[in-house]
Image (cartoon, rainbow, N blue to C red; front, top):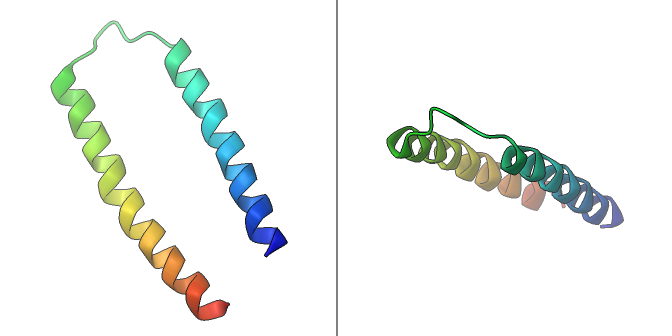
Length: 61
């Protein structure tokens, strides 16, 4: 259980670092359609991976 908590804290810190880096960068070619498309791809990839990871952890534990 402590390993999972440590992993969650580690991933949270990594996510925070990448968020700060992304916020500080400027995009001169910003396009809302491109942004929406990228965000959709992130969700389409992240949600199934999280569900599969949760199922695997449920089976292991």
